[in-house]
Image 1 (cartoon, rainbow, N blue to C red):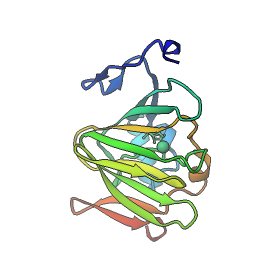
Image 2 (image 1 turned 135 degrees about the vertical axis):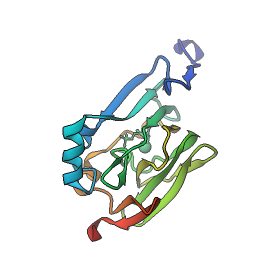
Image 3 (image 1 turned 60 degrees about the vertical axis):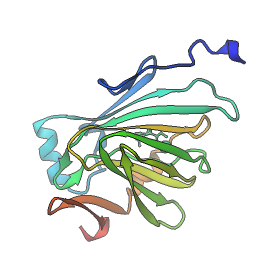
Length: 190
Ligand code: S6P
Ligand code: ZN
């Protein structure tokens, strides 16, 4: 019911790339151990600085059937070795829950991986792009540009996040920079 909601509008602050009155989660390099393919480059980068890679501010207004949650993500530019800064990546705990990403600023890619078949797709995300992430699909975002990549993600309230399944084996593909352009490789071949 309408009276249950104290706030329906949240300010999107383009400068800080955050939603006001939202729950913030920050991910630093030290929290992404095991995500990057080049573990030597990872250790070297971490020894230099525990950099902030991304932040998500999430709004979870209600938790019933049919409700929606959303988050604003900002993923900073950078690389570990030749691999672009990335998010941990996850499946939804409710596997059939899909999600829509709306790119706001910057340039990046989303790596989508079908949980059952391992089939991978790389989709562009950033200013001017909207990506539909089907259910049963692990998703990870990479910043391939030189400015912050910001995006909204909108998902069913019961989607939940399952990081464990993907942390156990990681994504099958890796997006690296080769001769100045992003190239998708098999993790196993690196
Ligand atoms: C939530 C949505 C995004 C991610 C964000 C960070 O369903 O997909 O808001 O949470 O991109 O990625 P991760 O994998 O660390 O949650
Ligand atoms: Zn998601």
